[in-house]
Length: 298
Image 1 (cartoon, helix red, strand yellow):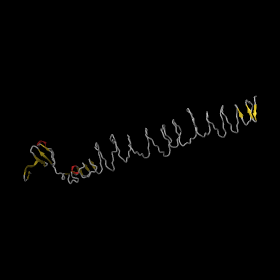
Image 2 (cartoon, rainbow, N blue to C red):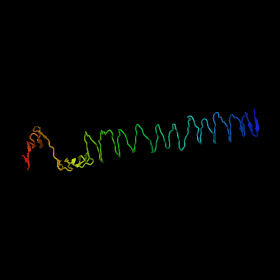
Image 3 (spheres, helix red, strand yellow):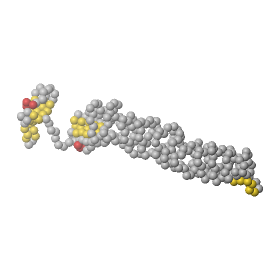
Image 4 (cartoon, rainbow, N blue to C red):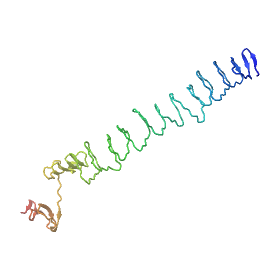
């Protein structure tokens, strides 16, 4: 073999022996190298792998797979490397591609796709828009803006509920237990039951039923069925005592007199006179006018 002793304990290769112990070796070395100190290589080529039982390996770059604990900054990664770690501890993580994990702990900003399963505790989630086929909420939902929905079982609103296409009540009815229910128009095909009062064109009805807002132009019906025209407290079945104009009576010819045995009053255009039916005969009650008054017929 070719072995040259340069100086001291320095040997220069080529050297082909079993075990060589030296403080320094210059040149190419093949085979197993066991170093107990600090070894410096300009280039280190490994066939099957390097096993470090302890200590620290420092290099400007690594090529190939690395197992074990790695500290420091991993810079210069290129291509599409697969990095598998047990735990990532970082103050921030900026990923321009896709991050896939079995679980996330902490705040996440940006777009998240996929299924968010396994959430526990009471996390606060802030999103721009939610699109879902179904949702089950056991607590309360607070909405500061407008909620647009269809086919909702129960609606509890402390503000104003606007139904753009109307309200269809298939059963149960509408129960207003307090406050004022205001309708621009209402059509009831079945039975409509109202509470203490019902107002039409007024939000503060005086009697059980009131049509109109101005007292002198309103119709009032009391709880006992008395009707007042301009009278808020009618004293008889029909009270017009607060009006100053007149009553327009039914009018027609003699041939147009109604049948029946109830007392009627009407104006007969054939006789040009007021008449009433006493149950048996029609009788004219006024036939002429005089300055001193009217003539009453028996």
